[in-house]
Structures are given as structure tokens and as C-alpha cells.
Length: 424
Figure 1 (cartoon, rainbow, N blue to C red):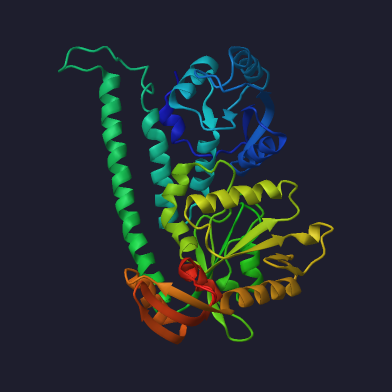
Figure 2: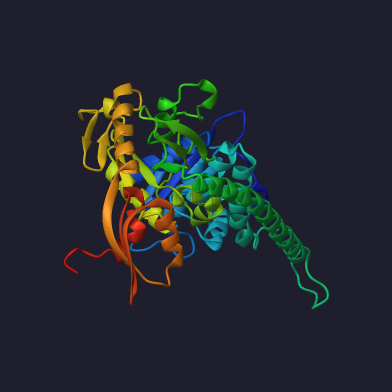
């Protein structure tokens, strides 16, 4: 068996383009294409593809034995093959069994994404987040990594060389995870202080979210005039890993903070969502989300679904949202056009950006009159009301505090559960 630890810490930096065979089970053509693009982002060329339809993936090898033999034959045809890429995350035992059978390093979709993140991480925070996710991926895969070493047990006091090595590496990796998480906590604390300062100064926040490569950074850069303020932008998957925030002032002098966040992708590993929790907190703290969609991508409806599911997973689904259909200049769609909570634009077009931020201004700074009855137990909500709403009438009632208020639309979600209609 191959030394898996050596493989896991292999980074995609070589002088030649690496070659891979792509393998999928119950995979759609669109999913295959996305995996090809992910491989390309890691400088890996897919030289052949094998797909299989199964009622469920094979427990031991993901694909059945016939397909394993077919993959082995292809490794000889395209020799040398550097990787066998799989469309889903494999279990540690599946990965070991496949490497034993094929004699070629196995890379599943989760590890492929981790490799891309490792290459793109530029800040200390992003590097630490990727390190935590990578180590958590490696940890359960240590068993079986030292079959080339003596594993014969010699009683409770004497263990085989392989067993000792696994125990040492397990402890070492666990320590590294703890240390990285400790450093991330410090950075998270600093970010929390920055957010608290923004909240105290009543600065509105808007977060750009969406599928990777939908054009979030292009939109941000489109409204930033100074080159030194612009964020990294390139036509590639996961170009942005670190949240970048910039102060934006509209022509009517309304101002807010705009944050560009990490892009989402189908089957984004949960470990990465977890590792990037502190970065994604910028989304949770936002008053408004700009859900950027690549209107030129034939799979954009699926991308919308993936983004909505990820927002649900991190607890951000209730935040007000504008859907921004970008790259309309590459389609037959008319732009710039506003339709309810949707806007159709091209990030390269000034009029489009003007239309977009008219929508933002209307959504972010518009007001609504409400009648609410807040239970006495919700003291924090009353504090939020006094800090942000104009109070026309207040009355202490048996079941709570009654208010007639006017406040910004972006805050109404906090009070809607306690809203009373005039007829009540």
C-alpha cells in the first residue's frame, strides 16, 4: 500500500501538468464538468473518465470490481497517471482498498477542494482554516498508512512499529488541530470586536454570497474606484477565500460595508464550512445578502439551490436577500433590469452597478411602520427597538410591551414574530 500520509500532504506544485482519471457514480454530465474544472484549478489534466450507475456505491471500493479493473487498464494506457479522482468523498477504507487495487494515489472531491483552498489561501486566517480542515481529513485516514512497517503485536507493552507510528502521528495531528483552532479563536475575537464597533456605530453591512466564480469580486471591484482598494479577481473557481470588506458610499451619502465572501460549490465539504465558520460569520452579521448568480451558466438554477442550502446550513436563510443575475452581457437577457427582489446586470457595465445599488439603497434604508407586542422576557429586543426605531406610541400591557414604531426594513425580521395587526 502507498504511504497515504505522504500523499495527503502532497501539494499541486510540479513542473509538468499532472494527469488524472476521473471516476463517478451516478454522476450527471454537469457534475463531471465541475469536477474537471476543479481539477484544472489544481493544475491537473483529466485524461479519461469512467462513470457507473449503481443503486448505491460499493461499500468496499465505491465502484464495482469490473470498473476497478477498467480503471487499472486505463492507468496503463495513460501511464504515468498521477491521480484517480472520485466525484464524492470516499471513506478511509474505500480509499485504502482502491489504492491497494490500483497502485495509484486516490483523490476524492473533498481532498481536491482542500488542495485548491491550500493553494489559494493567502492570509494567516485562511491558511489556518485550511490547515484545520486538512488535518481533520487526514486524521481518520492514518490507519492503514504504515502497512510497510512492522505491525506485529508483542503484548500490551510492546507494539509494532506501525502501531507506534500511528499513535504518535495521531497525537501530533490532534495537537496541531488544537493549536490552529486556538489561533483562529484569537483572530475570530478580533473580527468580533470589529463587528461590534460597526454595530455600535449603526453601520449597515451587505455580504456578497453565491456559487464560486459567479462574479462577486467583479461586482465589488466595479464600484471601487481606487486600485489599492480592489480585491483579488480572476475567472477561476475559489479565487476568493478570505472575506474582504470595503466601505461604500452611495451618491445620496448612505453608506454601508460591503463584504466579499468565499464562494460555495456543490457538495462543499462540511469540514470546510466548519473551518471557515469565522469567515462566514460576516454573512450571518449582514443586514442584506446579495446572492450573485452567473446567468450565463446553464446550471444556474442548481447553483441557486446549492447556495440557498449552504445559507440554511450556516443559519443565514432568514436574512433579506437580493438575487443578482450577473454576466447578462453574455446572454440574451435584457439588462440592467429590476424585478422585485431580483436585478439583472453585468458587473462590467456602470449602469448595471448603478441599478444594483439603487436596489440595495431601497432595500437597506427603506422603512416600515409596525405595531408589535413584545413579551417582557425579550429585553434585548426592546433594547434593539429603542436603539433603531422611531417610537410613536408605547403601552405596558399584561402580556407585554406594546409599541407603534417605524424602523428600517432590514430590521423588521426581528419584530415580525411579535407583530400585531390593527384588527387584533
